Length: 101
Image 1 (cartoon, one colour):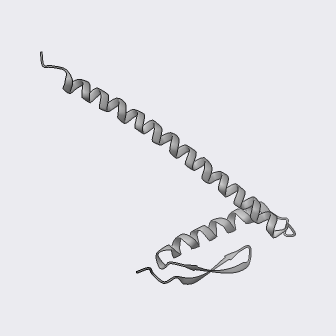
Image 2 (cartoon, helix red, strand yellow; image 1 turned 180 degrees about the vertical axis):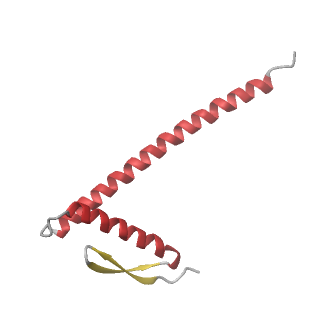
Image 3 (cartoon, helix red, strand yellow; image 1 turned 135 degrees about the vertical axis):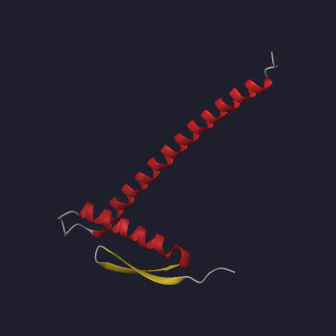
């Protein structure tokens, strides 16, 4: 049985948006809204007349780029860990495969 979604109101660039969210995802949504609001405010800067859609697209592009970098870094670390574990496994195999003297 799925949980019922509940309405949560977030404030982004002084505008309110109501979003339906699962109760256990509420904190994540609020955190994401806060991050998006901060990014949009950073992009808008002191230009209060900047078009909201342009600010939103640039914020989304920046966040997507950051996500892509994090994924790329994670993939690189995963490959490095796999290589290290493989090397260690080969060393252990060599130790146990060597007949005692």
